[in-house]
Length: 251
Image (cartoon, rainbow, N blue to C red; front, side, top):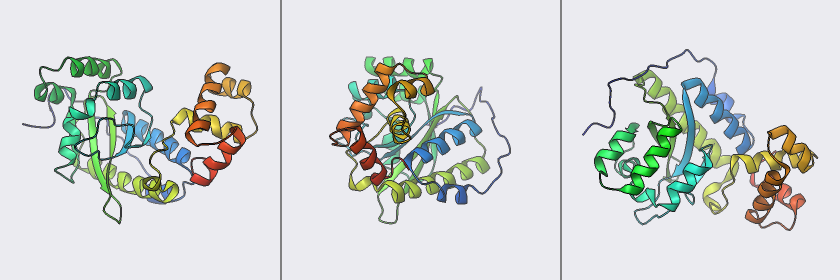
């Protein structure tokens, strides 16, 4: 069964210059990597990205394997609350191959046709315009396996673009390992918003000022900061900032 439906595809190829390897090597924090991945996703026509370890066969939630992502929070929450990791066509393929591949929402439907939870989740993916996931397996020098996934509209990527994305995935993952040593403490996974709030807190901004900068309510900013303080096992925000700096989440 093919992994990609080729009909009605959209080509989003645009020239992209610059030495991405040198740029990635210069990134200093996980937040720098998030911004780089957001920029790269946009340049290639994708909407979201996810970098995660490859979960084991008995895994129930993706969150514990997630390393870096800007996926919509409601999608991640729904994915884990309904144990979608058990139905993932992509994760099954990742355990069998080390070459890049693509999976569409139709591929999921064909291989899990009677799952109401999956149907509900795929409907949510469609609402967000995430019709195809592009998987790029990676590994580090010690053989620990992970994947970089870009999600967006259904698109037929050329071989040259696939090779370019694979090289970016390899360099990003290796830099992530260098910055965060995430496999040493993968129980702490910070969201993009949590990292943003910590960054602005480190810059001396109040919750009200951060709310204005990020377009959030002050209550929401406090929620993010309180949550990330607990995640980092800190006694207050100041200590959370210090711990985040030591772990490489912020500069």
